[in-house]
Length: 95
Ligand SMILES: [Zn+2]
Image 1 (spheres, rainbow, N blue to C red):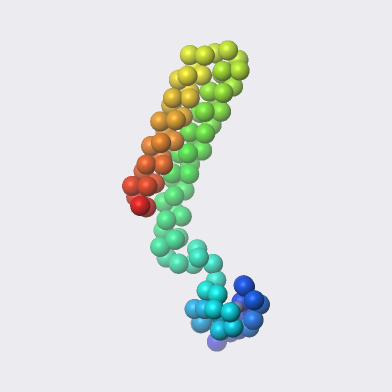
Image 2 (cartoon, rainbow, N blue to C red; image 1 turned 30 degrees about the horizontal axis):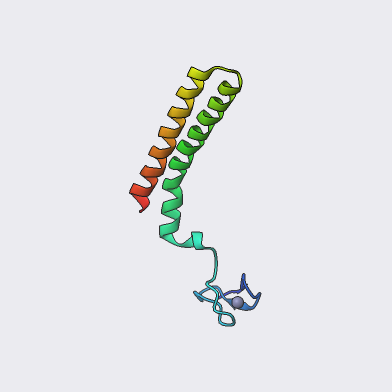
């Protein structure tokens, strides 16, 4: 058994203890929980999609500034649809 410092109050607590005996704070990061880790791994795919969507919208904005209105409208529409699809997929999978 090893002693670790509580992340909230700094008290020395057992590394086997689920919560701090002094302040009651849960020990360790929330990411240590299996469900959260799984969600973060699958969420990376959706974050990638959202990044592409944001880049498409940014390209659309640049096209608009460059007076390339048809290209701008197309890029914005693609970006918006992709963003909504990514958000919906993430919601569908994670609730
Ligand atoms: Zn504590």
